[in-house]
Image (cartoon, rainbow, N blue to C red; front, side, top):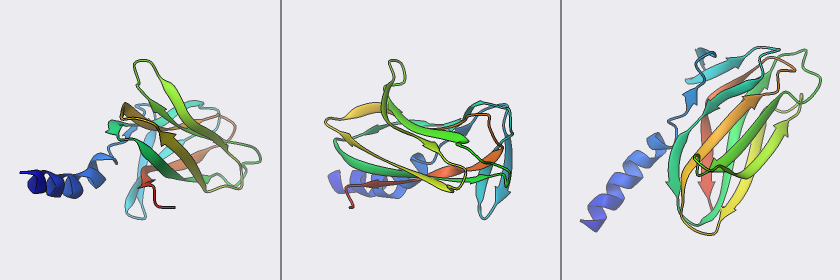
Length: 141
């Protein structure tokens, strides 16, 4: 039974962690084999978030892919990771500069935490697109 559960987890966890939800007001564009969420200049707020999963104790690295409009000249997005969405605690956060196409956040969990969300938000200063996928690694560095 234990081996069967481990096999199921290995097979389905990669898809589960990618269940990121675009904010209803955002447009989606499919390119390069992935969905990209469009944030227009002047439209600050959440771009995508999710999936609200549990993560066990350990150290993690999460990478977001973004692409700013060519006229971006200042920080345009904020990426963060929060736990316990009903009583949110920010585990890691960063702003994305005009010349950045990715944001990488590292965080450590001392115990099992629930409701982990990976979020990308627009600062409203420039238009950009954000890939609705994350790369999550556990203790691999």
